Image (cartoon, rainbow, N blue to C red):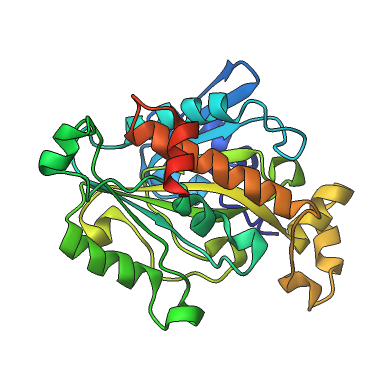
Length: 294
């Protein structure tokens, strides 16, 4: 059975050829920082890419305690994630932040809600920026393009068109992801420098956002909010054949926790603060989301 997951960490855990790969194929390191676990996976070769089913590149996973339990350390986690994100970005130039997904569907609302709390600064420049003491802000543009069913236009087409006008140095694409484990829902953040395929988590792949297509680095940033029903059946029973017992209609289902509203609320704040921390490291990420939401 093929396990559906957007997390490179989970793909590595289930890859049968992983033990035979060398560091020239896949490099994996893990460390703890407080209550957070950071796993860095760097896929170097074609063999590593084939084994994990992921494009060559860097994948960083940050696991934190469940956000549904408390949000006392959101700022601490945001700074940690922001540090990892900053390491994937070019040091200078405008950054375009795009929040992918459908805000009307709660498990898919991470991108649009997070993007609303990212401070747009591209228009703050010149004498106004100098006189107000804001000339140290990194130029940032923010967009929530909606989904094809709402606009009739692919998100990738909208982002690509905007890139021709804004000429950003990089794109940060925020989107909800799928996991194979319910334990990782809402408390795991993945960053990667290989871009993102909107809708891939629910089997609705749309036009990809990648460096190959846009000509600039595309950093994918996401939090898993759903589990495929067949994958969930296999995890809960410990038997992969149990997935085959899921009724045909059930096989197309995506499962999400009942506290998904709370998870999306806190996860979107965490992601927004992380982006603000990466782009504007001299300012408080908590204050920046308050300003951005005004």
